[in-house]
Structures are given as C-alpha cells and as structure tokens.
Image (cartoon, rainbow, N blue to C red; front, side, top):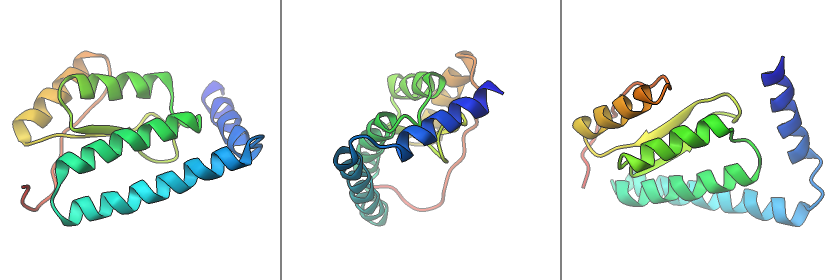
Length: 130
C-alpha cells in the first residue's frame, strides 16, 4: 500500500537523522511552541495560538510528516482567513485543524475545503475569546 509505504519512509527519515543536531533543534522548537500554545489557550489569545500553529506546521513539514494534500488544505484554510492551520496526529494521514474566529468563519473555511475536494467539518470548543 503506497500510503503505508510513504508513511514508513517518512518515519525512517526521521529515525535515520543524518543531521541529528538540526532535527534535535526542530523537536526542541516544537516543544517550545507547544508550551507557548498552552499559554495562549490559557490567555484566550487565539491570534497568537494561530500564529504558533502556522510556525509549528512549517517545522512539521521540515520533518517530512506532512503531505501535499495536507499542505493544500492548510493553504486553502489560511487563504480563507484561518488564524492558523496545521496537521494533527502523527502526520501522513491527512488530518488537519484550522483555527477560525467564530462559527460563520468556520463554516466559510469548511465550505472552501469541501469545495476544494477535501472532507471538512466545523466544530467549536467552549470558552470565551478575547
């Protein structure tokens, strides 16, 4: 199966790190972004959270865990005004999250993704946003 083989190749690239100091730095940066993301959530600062998501996605792409289809969906979401968008899960499987401001905006991003041939659904979490 091409999908499984492709995922294995990505995992091997990460494990076979020929530039360990570079990959270690990327993983450290991802850890730091995650902690900053937690702080942004605690502060209800969705603009910062979106920016951190976008930076994190760039690092995940550098680790070869993203796919062209994920990158296309992420770009479509961003082009439609998503505050941030990134893959979720282990990568390679085709799942992403887009952070939107309000239900109407989430529906607009969902419609754009679906119109682009992707399968998307909108959902929300409780809490107030600044």
